[in-house]
Length: 280
Length: 273
Image 1 (cartoon, rainbow over the protein chains, first blue to last red):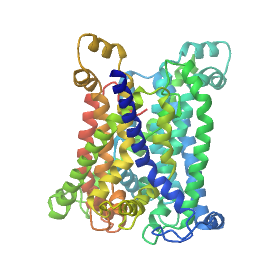
Image 2 (image 1 turned 30 degrees about the vertical axis):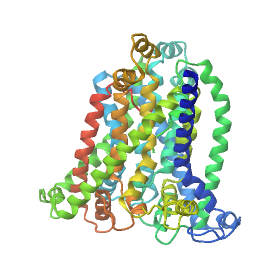
Image 3 (image 1 turned 90 degrees about the vertical axis):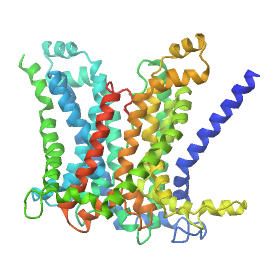
Image 4 (image 1 turned 180 degrees about the vertical axis):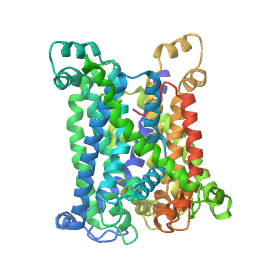
């Protein structure tokens, strides 16, 4: 009796998880199917074709937007990672009162609404007469990326033994050398997940870019937004499908060895893995 | 000796950055919101929330955001509990929640148009099965669906984190002392996951309340949320004072949310990271 109850329960669990999975993936499957649709409108199916994949690479607008998006994502997450790691190192040495204030301010962009962050940055750039364009987007992305890096690296810092770093200095290592040889290996997982998180956030951002970009420059998100009324170009579906499948394959490859490290390192699983990398 | 003290100054660049790009921009927004075009102090921008047009947009935003938050909590709690009991669930979480983020969020939301349209995928399937069709596209129901779809991960992850932190022995002890599953849930598990619940609620409520994209993509052009009103002030009407004034109203809700999170989640237990 009891055994039957348990298997029934596990069936319900499986069906429930599957339903949520379908809910989350139905739009993605739809977009992948649309990328092979011969008809230009998304309303009807006109037969199977690869032509959007071919014309994608000759579409200058989309390629330019892709280039801008990737460049902003790489630069903003790299700069945010450097600033974020330095901040974490510095915060350790500070009085706890100052530290609480700094971390409190760091929480603001994460808890605040994107529209408010976007508007306030737009007003800042307006007030200082800055020209809207690549520079303003980059500054904005660095700003919302730093908190993700700090919050990923900070928990790792707690386990860090400063005496080892100081011992390295006493033994004649330069601060730079000591950092890369002694401190870096301990906090590397935090740095990596912070960087990846920042990269993903930058890539997926629309709202803050929308308010800080100015005319004449587009990321993929803002380009899609302007296309909504005229109809999305099918090449966009092809490009997203390529990006999605690439990441899918990468995740499958990365995830295999990671399972073993999680098993051997039971004490601290979540923070090291990519699974901690969320929030759009 | 000198090098050791230098470490302290490593946080300096960020502190300057945070003042320049987090605090000053918010200060400027408050300044714009509390002044008129001539630079005179005025509450008119903030008080314009009382006009029928703006208060209707705000109350609609609040009710849709509450609906989306409640649905996310009801859908997300069981899912988080299932995932928390799974072995190696971190892999599953990546595939369920992180992978979709690599498909552009606007395109994913737009795809719901194709799925929900009168002659869309879902209705074609329903009518083939001789079931009644659903016509929710361009209504507030579609907007709530879009909110749940986009923000469900923010509910599940904090819940998952606080559920995995519960000590198994506490649950076993409850069972040994004669509690049934129902009592164990309401007396032990639910109170222990309150930080996760509160964190999830704020993480879903704030973006739902302030969105202008989801309402634009799934609500047709007729439904205006407070986010749409504010966005128009900046991109079309170029009335930054009014836009900032209305944003101050939003900030009130956001700050209340931040305080709730701070009270219930002191140890950042229900945090996403």
